[in-house]
Length: 240
Image 1 (tube, rainbow, N blue to C red):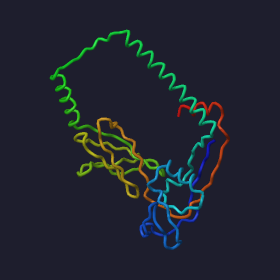
Image 2: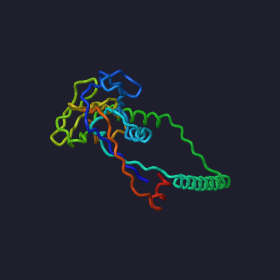
Image 3: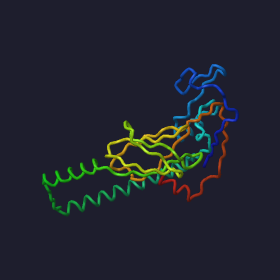
C-alpha cells in the first residue's frame, strides 16, 4: 500500500532557532515550552520515518524545500512472505550455479599465464600520474528547486582565488590544474556545496543548491492512502 505524507507549516513562528537551548533532536523553545525538532539536516527517508513513528503534533525547523509531499510504500505481511520466497528461490538458483561451475572446474585444467614486467607496471603508473596532474576543463550547470537555473553563482577552487561564475542559464566552465582539488559552488541565500574532484568525476557537473531560508512552527501532516498493490506491482517489489 502506498502512503503519501504532505508536510506544511500553517503558522510560521518568528522565534530564532539559534536562541533555543540545544537538545538532542533540535532545540527547546522557552516561549511555547516545546522542543523544536531540527529537520534541516535530515534526509527524506529520515523525515518519513520520524512522522511514521511519531503521531503526536510536532514543532519543527525546516528548509522550505522540505515542506512537500513524501511518498512511501508500506509493506504488508503477505508482501514480506513473497519476498522471502523470492529470496529463497534466488539462493537455491545461485547454489545450483556454483555447484555446476565447481564440477566444470574440476574437469578442466586451467592454463594460468602470469606476466611479471616491472617496465609495464612503471609505464602504467607514469601514465596515470600524468593524467592526474594534467590541467583539464570542467563544465556544469547550477540550479535550485525554486527557480531552476541560477545565474551568477560562484564556482571556485578551494583555498585559491581561481574561479568563475555561471551565465544566465546557470552554465559554467572552469579549467583546473589537476584532479586533486575541491570545487566550491555557492550562491547568496543558498547552502554552498563542495565537490571533490576524482578520476571518476564527470567532466560535466549537475549541481543543485538548497535554500538556507528556514521555517519554524507546528507541523501540519496530511496523510493520503492509495489503493493496494496489484499482483504485478507485488511481483516487481520482489526485486527492489
